[in-house]
Length: 256
Image (cartoon, rainbow, N blue to C red; front, side, top):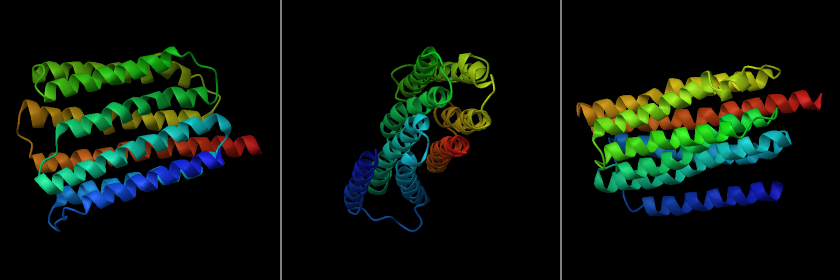
């Protein structure tokens, strides 16, 4: 397991060096606050990735998959943010496709985390896994098709909202929410509640950005990029840290 962590860390470091080398062809201006936000988020993501992979073997075996997935989420986001940062600094544009490629990988992984932390402490039905995975894909595909003009933007927003509302129902009142509410593990309950808050409040910025940026066209693109970047920074890293904290708490209890 230690060897696996070292390989993962080496891969992340290689990607960081490679991406930084490519990014050095364009200069970041001191007054380019969008570019600066891309850079800050990139560094935060790689720092979180190294942390999660380094900590993976310090938690109980049942929690290691959850911590590994947390590292994968921030690692994938790091690579995409380095590309988005380079495109922004070079062209002054932030293509929608880059964000959605990132979200199409990282958001389903985050949704799967609800299943993984439940499975770390008790036996749970795999239907929870599939419900959350499908809900996240519907949400993202609807949003992408609406933003890129494949379907009417309002229709895309409706589909995306339907996927998000389904996810919220599942983690609050559905099968996943009921499984979390059965009690018996304080760390799990605390983590699950914090993750629900992130998905409810933290994720609300994305449909609001869609409304003001796509449907109404009143949002400043620069400010929208900064807000999206900061939202990703908090939603992805905080999400993983909550899982890591629960894993450490359970590990300490088990070792007593």
